[in-house]
Image 1 (cartoon, rainbow, N blue to C red):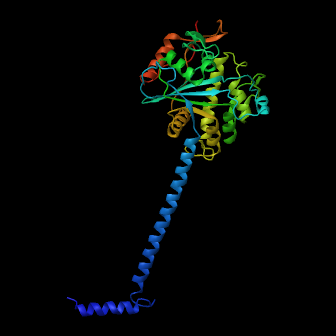
Image 2 (image 1 turned 180 degrees about the horizontal axis):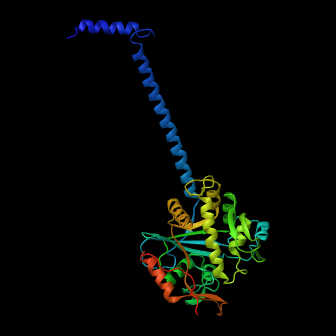
Image 3 (image 1 turned 90 degrees about the horizontal axis):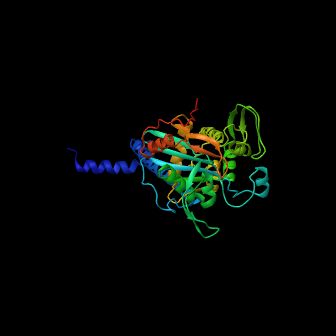
Length: 367
């Protein structure tokens, strides 16, 4: 055993030589200094990480506050029961919020009060993947009974174009109309206006599209040449709004909108142009500034919707139109597009029960 006196002597010796660099006890001292330095470094790293977490959390919280949760999906009551999977309704409106008088003229946005919609897409996500279904604005549907705010009288259910329900009662009546005519419960709603659309496209540096023909349309302002080109915000808006150059009118416009949305999602997913509502960059800010969503939509829900659209754009899902039996059908409300009753019912039933979708949405030609 070591004599305690020797231990005390050793301790004293160590204390005496501790401050001498050449001491045989110097390496231990150096080790202690290195350990202390590492502890300080770890604390500094933790402080930096904590600061980043606060900044990111603050940014995320800031973005949450930017969401305009203005839509009450249950405003009209009598909704279908919840189905399986999640259903998003994505709407492009002609809202002029954020546009100057000059912008309205340049974008051929027209005038008049109220809001209208040229683009409606039903996005379903579930166990069997993602399906994105275009609902043409001229679809002939039954608009539910409602209170006419102009006359104060209750209107009975009536046949009309799908986008008329948006004009009559905004997002709430549009959602109720779609739910009544499809049997699907809409879980979330997202609407982007003219200004937001243009800003998003410009923020990601434009969207590259390949056109199989020249497109010139006075009403939308489209003036595009055949071939591959990058569309800026103004050009993109004109492209997705034009229909007078389309042989199948509103049905052709719906197909163009799907093509453009796919190209937009792919472009936005590239490094340097990432548009993710949880990653606050110029594109995300542009979108959040004019986005209108339902009361229960969170930033995470919005991100999941965006990623689902990106997935469809990348081929991981289906893009289709609601099946139709005819377009340009004359009615007291103008020429309309009529859904194929049996095929559309089968499509909506598959979505409601989250079954694999077998419908293609292509219009079947009669021989």
